[in-house]
Length: 366
Image (tube, rainbow, N blue to C red; front, top):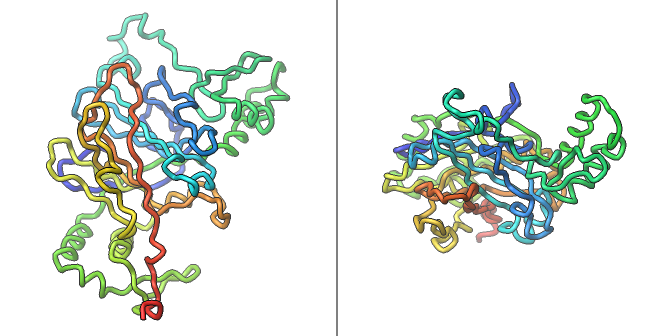
């Protein structure tokens, strides 16, 4: 995914990975352990702790989003972390997500275009030790075997029990059995891993959308609503739908399985992209989207995560404490500012839910 000079929207879809989603391939993906763009400098658990329950968050999405400007952003990845406990989001969703931007220039010591251009000293740089459970910096180590790293006490305890490290510690176990238990532990802690593949939103659909906007708002308010009932959908003119929800519904209908809408505009563009709102309410104000604290420039919409992503997270939607959102909007520094010796820049996430008034029976309006 990359910035565009025009309002082109790239759609992201989830697919089972055909090959390992490792850092060398610059993947865009859901869940699993992060594929670090900068393998020497990776995030600490303290940087991604939920500010409600204080437990380490886990990777929700990472997108590889290279750009031409500035040169330091030739390689660029956005990481979105999320607390898995839906109860925390109900207390404060602002404290239950974190977004980071990481970038590297074209010529760097980790992913050089030409390996022969590196001297022997540079080649010997080692990647940081990772938590065996979640992939954050493994700043702690098992005190008995001194072979396994962890990001936190929470993940050390989880690996000791569900990862069966209490059996394998200080013993000689086959790699296949140990890795099987490691994967079982990760499955309990992390979101399932899927590759994100992209496709440009259809031009015909964009023209139809433009026509609808020129035709005026009355065109939306008089349209029929698609009302879900069980596994079926039917048209019902006896239902009022807020205009933003109806526009959202019409826009995604040709691509119902999309999970990401990427529409970042190049820094030189004067027109900032507009999200596909899921509701007429709960939109961020200028004060909610603060300018970049490092360069003072505005943050603009880069991409949004749709609620369809929830279908891939293997969560129980019937539980009151399950994760839920209408859309997650990711805003990032328009100029990709580079801060010396700062490997991860915090960016902004805004959550918008579907309105309770999105669907209203007309009898309630009388």
